[in-house]
Image 1 (cartoon, rainbow, N blue to C red):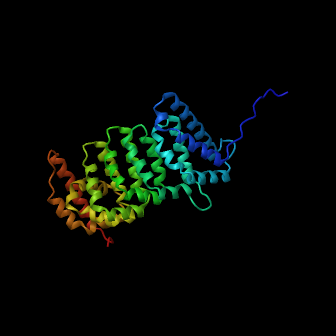
Image 2: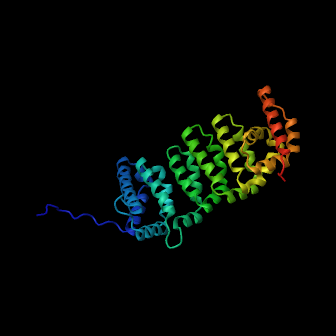
Image 3: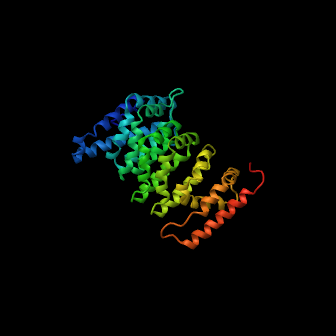
Length: 329
């Protein structure tokens, strides 16, 4: 004899789940947020729907997700304009809801309906959502969640290219120096991905915005914050060494206005016993100009004169040695 008085609830279809998610997020309006009990109940409904969303996208560890359902779910999320709600309601969500959303966001960007990545295409057509995620670094409560979501977006070339060329990209020069260490570190991780994930897009961006970019970047390389200076130096040595950026490095390495900064960067290049051939060629071809500029370079105010001169002399000797190496034409 069965003592069950209730039938187990029927699993929601993708369409039903999307509708439930949309309604629960829309319920987080200003009136609900202002009333403690109403907000608590509304957030519980959102979190319950997010758990179901995660199960449908990822399975439960024992049962694999139904890919037909996942495809339909992704399509309906885009058709019902749920992506903007996921992003704009993020500041209201609780810790658990944000965590589940970030996980689901990563999965949604990977899903296809037929040959189309619906969510990626949606973001391409609603690029203001990417700008919103960037400016969320101003809100330390959700900055790390938005950072994770942004880095998932940056894996896609079209989305990364948009952020690079958007006015919001300039905000990263501020965000990487925020007083909150965790937020600043996360912003730097996103900044690094933007400058290293897609070589061709980065090369095109640096070519088109050379002066504006390096004027801002110089501030990071000369920052009063040691961590910022160290991270920025390491990063510039990475992206300038990418093959598509060789013309950028050739221009940067011989510019007088960046020479004091380049002293530090040259130490990285010159001191490396396994210098890439491309670096050797650039140093050799530009050795006369570099040596002339270095000979006339004096330490900045407050700098250690003896150490500066010693380092300069080492760099000069190494550039001179490299310039006399055979087969570098």
